[in-house]
Amino acid sequence: MIVNHALHIAYKDLKTEFRTKQMLNSMIIFSLLVIIIFSFSFADFLTDQDLITMVAPGILWISFLFAGMLGLSRSFAGEKEEGCLDGLKLCPCERTSLFQGKVISSTVLMFIMELFTIPLFIILFDYTITGIPLLVLVILLGTLGFMFVGTLLSALTVNTRTREILLPVLIFPVIIPVIISSVTATSKILTGAGFANITEEVQILVIYDIIFFIVAQLVFEYVIED
Amino acid sequence: MALISIEELYKSFGNFRVLQDINLEVEKGDFVTIFGPNGAGKTTLIKILATLVSPTRGTVVVNGFDVREKPIDVRRSIGVISHDTYLYHELTAVENLRFYGQMYEIERIEERIRDVISRVGLAHRGNHRVGTFSRGMKQRLSIARAILHNPVILLLDEPYTGLDQHASAIFDKIMQQLGTEHITRIMISHDIERGLKLCNRAFILNNGSFVNEVARDKISSIEEYRGVYEHLVTGE
Image (cartoon, rainbow over the protein chains, first blue to last red):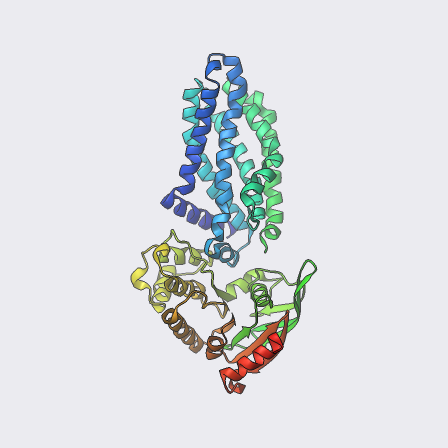
């Protein structure tokens, strides 16, 4: 079963990560630092609610994506140690299960990081969030879009010497639709908008996620080959 | 029918031809060693047999399965031992084997893990993290990982790299035990002495082609074979 294989890979990844916490700690600390630095930078404007409403959603997503990038860059690179990537490729299963497993483990780590980041963001930028289910929906869709593209590109760049530099350069232009839609929807939710006001952004995110999930399934076998 | 059959295999990376006109038949229980200098194409050949790299041209059939058409069945038939161990340092020896066992969908997995880990003499270190193991212990665990799913073929890619004399001797002993189970083995090596010690057929690969094939019992001495190797590879 392809899903079983993906779950085994994800479980293995999370088990090794929770044992060392190297990546998770880095992601959480980095994300919190971004929020803190921006809150200090905009300290003089924190009373100007209109200005904060305009810039804060962008700050939140910058912290998510930059911290998520740390995790993505290690997603496949960590498998290069002791040749484990070849070990996984030798397993008698579809190679796409490797993609799916990596998406699951990276997404779980990113959700944990987001769980730590949001409360600090709410406190420092003095928000009262009413539409929590909507915010969760947008974060879920935005994170998945980022992970589908990021995991694919992480596999693509894993054999390059400059992967840490190459990955962000490749990923950010491709996820512009995710960034714009997520930031816009988050901005609307933070100002009290309901689902009817964010349907356009949600549609874009859902379509983007579906397209890149299918594209990744089709090309991953070739991307991961030596 | 041969267990491994390669016909007119060619492999190129871009314009660079790595393997050309490779033909090879390996019977059940054979131990074939392929010698060759760096860049001869040995690792590429093993990677093609292991479905890690696709052939450019030619037919490669492993245990009755074409590597292009039935790669998953090929992978189920083979175990690979390399200088890379494919083991996770943060997991214990048993956890590593359990993970690979799940990926290979092995039934009665705990029983099988106990069996293979005892065979490589690491039962007492089963719950220790692999990161604390010596190179020799990791390589022994790597053998356990490779035979966990009862493969009919073992592919050995420079397995002695980084092993000291003692660890190499243990490795040889395990390989000989596997021979009694009629597991077919293909090893690539630089080390002529060790490579000849275990095999029953030896090949020399140079510039992407086989330039010599000989049955082990036709080689009278290691020095003689070394002379043939030097002559064919360096032209001296």
